[in-house]
Image 1 (cartoon, rainbow, N blue to C red):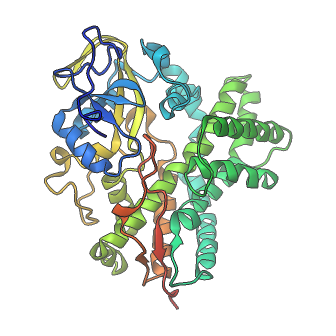
Image 2: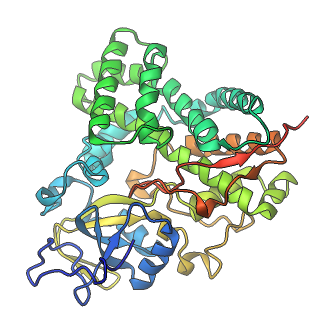
Image 3: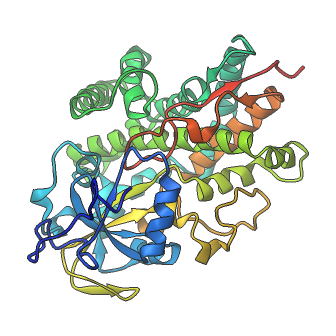
Amino acid sequence: MTDQRPGQADRLDPTGGLGQAGRSVNGERFVLDPATADLHGDNDRLRRAGPLVPVTAEGVPAWAATQYATLLTVLTHPDLSRELHHWTTRHAMPPGTAIDRIVTDTSLLNAEGERHRRLRMPLTTAFSQRRLNGLRPRIEELTGRLIDRLAEMPPDEPVDLRLEFAYPLPREVISELIGIPPGHQDELHRLTDAVAQVGGLEDSPGLRKELRELLDQIIEERHDTPGEDLISDLFALHEKDGGRLSEDELFATIELLFIAGHVTTVNLITNAIGALLTERGQLDLLRSGQCPYSAAVEETLRWDSPIAYFPMRYATRDIEIDGVHLRGGEPVLACFASAGRDPHQYGDDAHVFDVTRPQFTHLAFGHGPHFCLGAPLARLEGEIAIKALFEAFPGMALARPVDELPPLDTLLGNSTRTMPVLLGPRAR
């Protein structure tokens, strides 16, 4: 993020030439840079600028909720909605951007009220504690298989743990949970490699279209070959309840769950590995049993949220939040990574990774009616993955410092494109 364009601040014309949203103070605004190499430094500057800050994100003017308390208010405010029709300047949004993909999603992601409850309710059993308990042995098995594969690699040559470990585990879990047939998995994985930003394929609107078409094909096929999986459960509910979920809604829901159900967990596991290999004293606390590995998962979620910024909520009428006046129709961007390091919430050491920190709540999974359905699964995968990895390779070390690794180059995700390590010998 910069608060300047090559030499001068981005300015609005007197009529709000970039739209009403993000009306600036003294005509200046922050421009969020998806390719920033210093996301947390950018967020420090945003928080200092205020609780709601005018920004430009992928060409879209908006308000950014930068501080924990303000973000909590935004996530729960009755006069802020995720329904796109409330956005008065939505037609000026550049097409094909990450923001465009998110705000035009037709699943429960952007539903409110009764429609949101109707779309969300069928999914609660898929992520119930009973189902998660049943998944644990399978997650442990998949993790063990990945570690066996890592152990076959040269111990003194760099291995990219984002590509070889953090990505395949949640991808395999969500594929099984949803019910992706084996015959489609190779092509689906090729496309989702780009979404998770691993390998050489670049994410693009065209690739997203391919992915959507393939998922649509898989869903159609599973309608004729049901099994014990989420696609089959949703089709059964669709038919039993006489279309309480329309087919369009059903398809959009499954597509959302497949993509959202693993990409952010890739970031969580990657970020946890980087944090623990950088802060070796924190890793020692886990290995000694003084702190559980679950504490490392929660601290990673707070300290290095898998999501940087998430669009959008729209004011349904003129409102005031923390002394800032929002006009009806203006969009607000949720700054999750910024809120996680807010000194007002976490103290002067908010920037420090500390697994002994009292378990204050964080907002990495959202809050309120739109709280992430997959949060328990992500936590379970993260805990199993990092515990098994660090127990298997006690001498593991970073091949490059984390702050020298390339960022994801996306407004939404917060992680690095790679996580190269030297594994060292496997524990006996």
